[in-house]
Image (tube, rainbow, N blue to C red; front, side, top):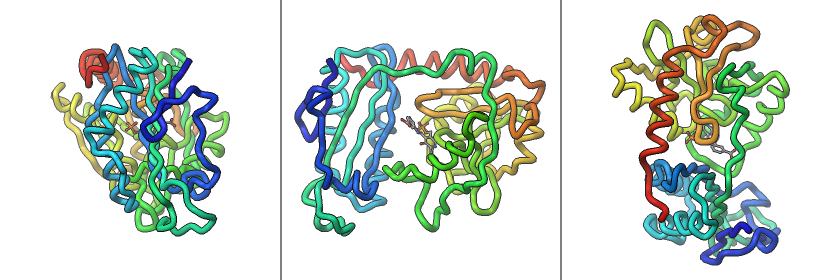
Length: 288
Ligand code: PXG
């Protein structure tokens, strides 16, 4: 029986409810984090908490908990559900207000923590790789709203996901046509042994898996370049993969009908996936 944290109290799934006047629902006014825990430890918890508070700062939202309190509430949510492996959804909304969009009328932000088991992607995708198509929907321009904020407004990504449809995952470009990211994952490619990924300024979320992969590559002596990338760079890459908390490292074998490399998941992708798996099993904030 799962237990869900709302503003300091644990509720059963049936009773875990928030007001229809919450601006998280009415306007998508809020932020969130998606976190994984493995083997009784929360992976990169400090980084997720830091990103949450940065997102909050960017939208002028005052989280009513300190970082230490939020960390403890997150660990307590895992304990309350007796879990050792799973997924945490941490949400902070603007809170209950009236029907106007002015956040000043919201009394207090709502904090929600859901710790649950994780539905893993089919193993087949990791062994055979994923097909990706470029979406016509461009990633929202940083000058309009920064894609670095992990906000409750995911319609830009959802529209791209709908476009990608059954074809596979969607690749999103920025307004200038450079590669930004996938609909919910960051993008990497390998060419002649060098690892490339677009800079965050291309219009991507600063993925925590992305940071981890960059670190792992550097430790393995692989050169890493954060540069603007075009679709040409992707089509002509030797290897291509996506990174995200939920997907971890997932190989891409086809982009817009062009096979990547030899059309099979590549060796460096496999090597980095192995290192990533080891790290997730052996590090993180202890839950118990
Ligand atoms: N870009 C976007 C737009 C994302 O939403 C990533 C990149 C990868 O970031 P991390 O920090 O996870 O490496 C994300 C992450 C969900 C869910 O439930 C979404 C994400 C992560 C976990 C779960 O939809 N997005």
